[in-house]
Amino acid sequence: MQPEDLVRDHTVYSCVMGSRAFGLATEDSDTDRRGVFLAPTALFWRFEKPPTHVDGPLPEQFSWELERFCALALRANPTALECLHSPLVEYADDTGRELLALREAFLSRRVYETFTGYALGQRRRLEASLRGRGVPRWKHAMHLLRLLASARDLLRTGRLTLDVGDGRDRLLSVGRGEVPWPVVESWMTRLAAQTEEAAARSPLPEEPDRRRVEDFLHRVRHASACGAARPGPA
Image (tube, rainbow, N blue to C red; front, top):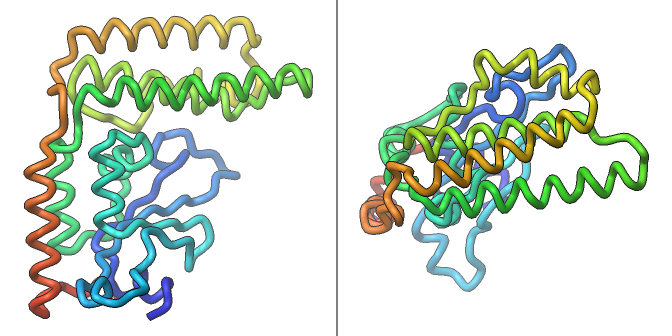
């Protein structure tokens, strides 16, 4: 079985991510698709295991095998968690809907380290770009601000919301390079401080509900082994 066949025939969940999911799309925005496929259990009985992820077959499309996706989400990987909260779901079968129903089980205070750690790395790259090019990568700065605000609000409320809502115009002005870099820097620093403060009193649990997720994974693997796996989209 080719990797593309796994995506075509065994996808359980797919959504649109990127600027379109964040409410920051413009006329030039791509459509970034992310998905989860359930590799048939029988494929794991061979020496050569199914892939943990697949690029394509559509442009800007990337999918994870269910177990890999769950492992990433349990570790509070920002990309995986955000996929579960996309407002633009394109497909979900019964297994995909059950995965979506588990969204809260993946959330924990680990998001503080993972989201802010990723943001810090991106900020360093921005600063390096500024030193090398003399001009920041404005779109990267825009998305970094969005990520920090999302992390802050998630830690404050226990809910992950992707759409920037009323913040759209201000963030797009950053993406167009219309906001002075010192103002953007100050904004980033302020958001980082607010995120740290929110982490100290967050309603999120210390750890995700690993047992609940593992029970789900075991159940769908067993169903697949018994020939009861549900097909993906045509």
